Length: 174
Image (spheres, rainbow, N blue to C red):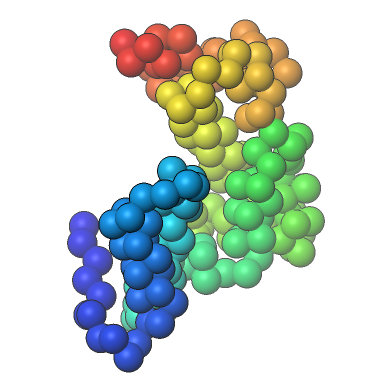
């Protein structure tokens, strides 16, 4: 899919500022550029998505990511999971983050995100683990702990179920 945002210099000043900062870092790398460029790319993506979501017609924001990110309760739960994937999350704890009853939260989350809260939590943990396996040389037990598993065996089993490969094979790119 494609997102098109018109290049109107008078609109979206934050987006234009992020583009200018990124251009400066890429055009003239200096001390700290290796850290600044990925952070600016993340910021740029966030501004693009924010602007795009704000421009979506109401009917397209009744389900899916646009709806989930426009729902304060679901967004609060998503932020909590993303902030601390290793926390011992339960539906009740996520519902408390969202300020809803357990049943109401579970229904709302599932309707907007497209999967149950704990299913999303597992997906996010496995996505985070995959990124850590490829981007770091951290030991498996450390990655398991960072994504909420106290046992390397339980983590490896869950990872293989999610990605079809053992964590070590995934790290090697096998």
